[in-house]
Length: 309
Ligand code: G3H
Ligand code: 13P
Ligand code: ZN
Image 1 (cartoon, rainbow, N blue to C red):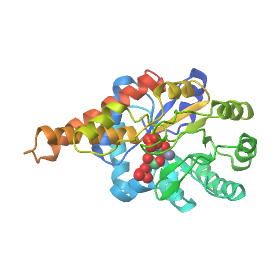
Image 2 (tube, rainbow, N blue to C red; image 1 turned 180 degrees about the vertical axis):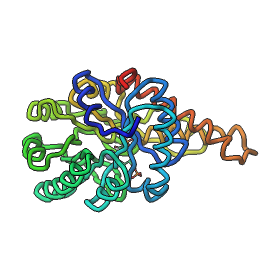
Image 3 (cartoon, helix red, strand yellow; image 1 turned 90 degrees about the vertical axis):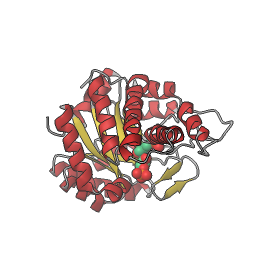
Image 4 (cartoon, rainbow, N blue to C red; image 1 turned 45 degrees about the vertical axis):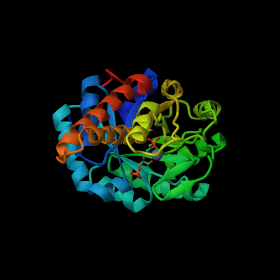
């Protein structure tokens, strides 16, 4: 099975009331953990690569790892650029074999966002690649950009944006945010389902994307803190809220922090229990297993895409 775009995945997800998980990859253990889980659950899959991941591991290494996973699992896999910062990065990923790119113009004025997104769409579509755009800004940290508070998507802008750019999917801001500190301690987690509903009415049948959708599961934060970490105020989006979103027009749900937390908690625990070990395989093996378990949990509790591959 060759790499696929997300087009057919999203059509089926929209019609079937489920979402596809888009998981960030940075190294071999992460790729293996995610793809083994998806294979066992027979789940369609998006593996996404950030600019930071390309810098860390190099494009070619990640691409070859994903190709190996494709051969190993036989799954339909889409490989996607997460938060493409500019046209050049998107072009480089398209030329380098990705089947989907995000151009993140969300911090730019509306007209500039349209301009850069349209340029990426023209190049991508000419090469059989699909494009995700973004309107509205999530609070939290993305690469080097730190946004203090949400700038929710304005539903009045979405039709014009999609029509003028030709994007294939749209990321919107409804209260999710990146990282492990999504709500201030004592604040009730809340998502603006009213905005999602209005966007859906204005873009019937169009696939919507949620970024910043980790749940920051207390069990893993507690383990990190138990074994020497210091993350006392980490809070995420409750899984039932994300499950609700997955049954709507939301076809892609981005998850990275939950994988990082699971991996880190497992490695910390391993070293606490095996202080004399120094073979990376000894601690990366349970870490890879923790990634696999987390992805299975997401497929069941949040995405609903098990058995849909
Ligand atoms: O939204 C950002 C993703 O979690 C990727 O993070 O830029 O640190 O690779 P990164
Ligand atoms: P989390 O930080 O909530 O996992 O979000 C990841 C993401 O949106 C990647 O684009
Ligand atoms: Zn994101």
